[in-house]
Image 1 (spheres, rainbow, N blue to C red):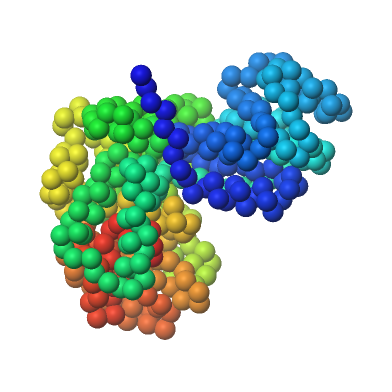
Image 2 (image 1 turned 60 degrees about the vertical axis):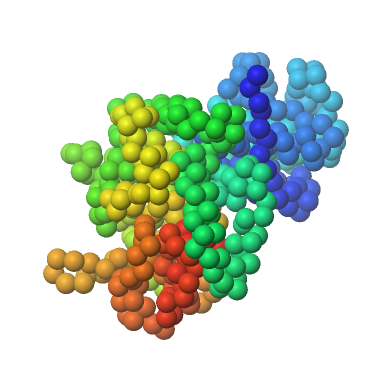
Length: 446
């Protein structure tokens, strides 16, 4: 018997805030990649917060259901038909209608304007943006939408799924007080984190781990999700170029280059066509973009270079599988190296991808900065956060190495702009002069 796991997700509180504050004046669009749990959380919310609900899955809906949104002159008829078709009674201001996979019925999304104005029911939409973009060219996008971005399960949500509600509050207390937890406890917390890196935050992967405690079975699930993403990319680009860019992320990160080079992967493509591919990849939400800033200051977007960026896989668990996708599970050295805590320096990009994911899930946009050290070398700050009127530079180390030359040079160059400075590494929380050395599992607290 296959167990069905319903996971606690932080987005639920954002949805609750939308419901209470808007009182039906807007619809809610949940944005995010495929397979991160958008449909599940929408239905879970509907069950718990409304008297009744109808979920229209436009991947399965009949042509008759879809055709209801061709003509909005008689909303009474539409609501009567839906109640009969789904054998559910709708109650004014006490019911919600979910448009699941709304990209499959663009006219339903366009209808949101008039359905919201009608005011009888609430509306929640979910869908994959890579498909939404393709299917909205000839419709009017409703302004009556509030959007919430959803990500794979973050580390705290993963710990909740493991039955652990104490780890993250404890870590926050220690971080706020700048207290060490001791080497032995740090090693235990790093073991927990490495499991998250291997399983990832895709709900299907987490469910499979809880069901089997078998990483081979988890890897098989992740391979299926990657195949799904690549097939999605082909709906936009039949020649598979977007998929090639996606699959090149681990190799590009492993080379420790200062930017992602799409032209080294796809040669001879006109710049405007390449830009279209990059935009489609960004809108798929399967990746995290980190843009270079020329002048790092509190207004980071002011000097971002949209043509100079790094790419990280949106879920580190998927990245671990993607890096060795051409090999069998037993040959994936990332699993054995991470499990034994013997990750060599040339695989340190896994930690960098994880920190990008953790910072992004915490609501941060990602930026980095490089500048010349000498004729053949450069300094690099891996991530920069804006906090108040100042910035916080972050340097990442994949080991217990505590040197931070780039961080020191950056803080000397931009001393008047610095709030806090962090080195993220694998050991316990410590201070090193003005630099706070932060264990990887606390990166989401920065």
